Image 1 (cartoon, rainbow, N blue to C red):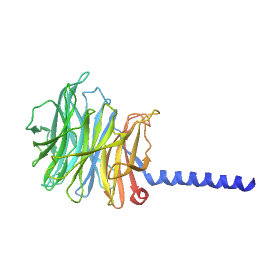
Image 2: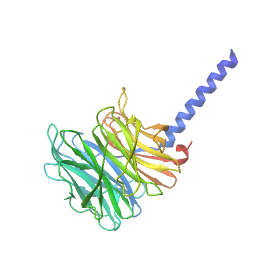
Image 3: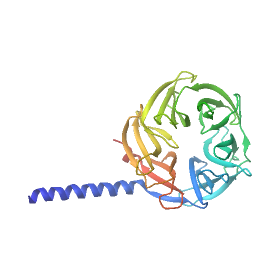
Image 4: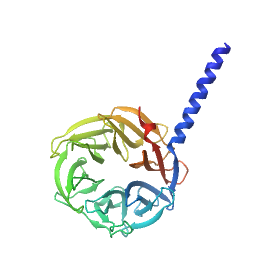
Length: 334
């Protein structure tokens, strides 16, 4: 009896120690909360600085007060403002960051007017100067396809071509199309991804063989996320349905065979921001939950000095704010 009791005590100590080590390994700090609602961050590294784009507004939605604040830091601790992107009487939302082949930061965002649904919605872009210290005014991007309510949610550069997925909000159902650009302003149609369930937010990555992998959120039907894959010229697609819903999906390749997927995790007890380590088919091998709750997710992710740096937003501390986590890569491995 005594031995059994001691055994249970040892198990409890082990579990508590493991939990404490896991919490410590996340290394989480709040980095931005100046607006009433601070959300939808993205992050890149450029010219020896970390850059984060934050949508500042009064609330999540409906809200036509949104603007994009660009902040940067040398160490991830002290942050300064370097750009502000806004359009009068319009909502500027969910900026995604990339570095162009010419060596400038590109900011891709959506601008719209919302009133019980979008009345106007189209993509706009801004570019930094060479040292990343200032940003050009927003300008409207062009597409060689029939306009609708259009949102190019993110952009990934590969061999000096930028690729993004536009989702079009149409009365008969939403559509997703692959676009490409050489200058970040003018976009050409490549192919449609035949995905049902109102597909929308999508992130593109390329493997070492140049194969395109796209992580796609779906809003209706069973709402499960999708991995879409295609070899060049990216017109023939294979699809794998995931076993989880996605919200603000982002991912990176991890080692030879895995992915790291950052997303909102939908639960009966409320949403959380999580990181899934999966295989190339999206089968979940490990999940890390971040301190989060309520209105949350939309991670920006990058690797730096053997750590995964990840920004996300959350309202678990009442005010919706931006958080930064630095996770040792060894803690993400098997």
